[in-house]
Image 1 (tube, rainbow, N blue to C red):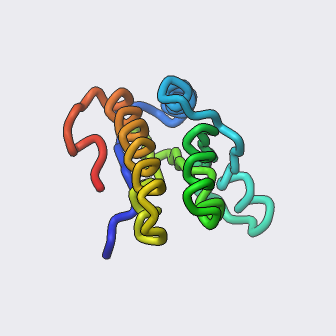
Image 2: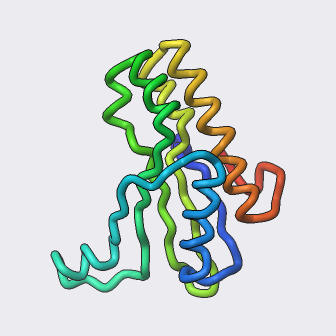
Length: 139
């Protein structure tokens, strides 16, 4: 199975991790355009209880514009989804790996944008975990 995410698990509760992820996304140059509360949505629509989990739609307009200029179909993969999920005493952060865009477009401009976004998002995970190696962001 192909891995299409960057991920990390941090030893802090969800309520502490979520605002930190938002802050670090901002530090990396990304804004949060959308937020989907999966827990609330599944409860409201299906009556199902699941641990707290949100999808943050992160975007860096400069990168998005460059990617769209290279290949307009990239719009289907924007914004970049960042999942923050409660796992008890820990929190899992899972990010759609921008490098996966290169599987769908062979345009060199898309590859450049994907590499830049991946570097920034990987750095965000490193800042979150305090690790500067592949344990913080596996591809």
